[in-house]
Image (cartoon, rainbow, N blue to C red; front, top):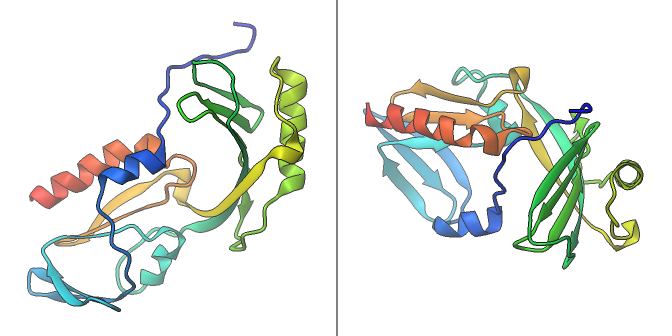
Amino acid sequence: QDGKATEQAYLIYPDRFLQRFPTTTDFVQSITPDERLWKVRFQSAGEKTYEQVVLATGQWTEWFQGQIDVPKQRAVLGSFAHWDHVEFGEQSFSHSLHGSNLIYQSLTKRLLLGATSVKDETGTLVKKAELREMWEHVRGTIHLDLPAFEDAAFSTGIRALGPGRRPFALNPAPGMHLVGGFYKNGWVYAWGLGERVARAVKK
């Protein structure tokens, strides 16, 4: 109605979600086939053998070009502003306004605004001028008393943009799985791609 659309959605808190998974950080030096297994050599832990290997290498996936068939991707630099310890009630919300996204997480009392997109750039420079424009646009469009822009903290990172802006899950070799191209839609497609990888593992 009146040019507005409302859909049900879920908010995911990555820091809490990822706590469910054990993590070990090490540098992978090589991955080589060994009959029906894969030998993975780590910088610190030495060589280990696995039946299944999942490669989630973001914009560096194209490093595998010439070895396995991988889709062409582009690096996209994205920045967003966020405010902590803000109060907008007990109900979380998400608004999209002409490319600007305003998200309130009631559980963590955090407000997020963004994100910018700069294709084919691999730096970490925050685009504060563009974020300020978003802040001014949102402030003049919706009836919310936004925190001062000067009080915002900023985060930036590199996202991988795949063909047609769609993520992919491939099985280029027995026991090897390749996922990528998540860009802005990573959480939306995550469950479906996870099921696809799990089906391939069962084979």
